[in-house]
Image (cartoon, rainbow, N blue to C red; front, side, top):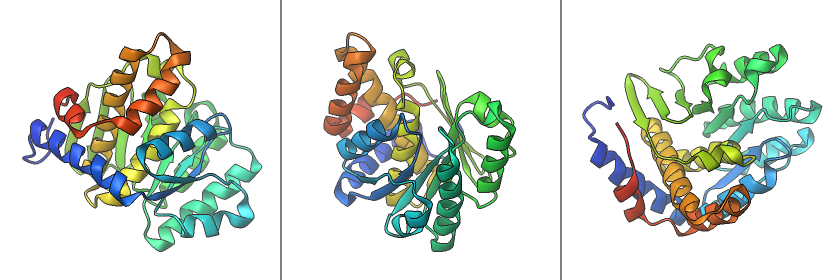
Length: 247
């Protein structure tokens, strides 16, 4: 890890402090996300202490983004309304100077989806989250956008700083919408911390630690979901400082 002088232990302490700050601030996060992820994403934000809204209607998306502290643009189920709403949301957030997160789900499987991701990326989102396949073909400048590549090891890159996080559990990949919800959590952390690299790193660490703690209580994917929501809600700052693994 190279974070311009910040030690792993200090990053864990900072991440724990930001988790508390999200809970105190209760940021409103507007989510344009795929249809299979809406309920889980909203519940994760509520458990975290944030305030979600989820409409994808193009004729009202501008008002909802304007009334929110940050926005998630997830390209999962990219129907006509979501495609239009994604562009309106990005332009609105950009114009207001509000944080927004791009999650280019399956951008590697569709040329039109990849093109939309590049168009939104040109509006300079605060961060982009995706797995290696999704972000590998997208031309992103990590001097302008924080890049969060998630997998068995999560990597955050921004302006020469790199963090690798080893938290998480395989059950997280066996449950629909876990990765999509992470994008919303990143948005919440971006509201309470101006240092975007720190905000994204803290979000991933908190989310990964919660996944590990929840998995220890679960018997499989079905019981993992309620365990994860309970864990996000009850996660202690000491859990992050004790269990966070960053290198």
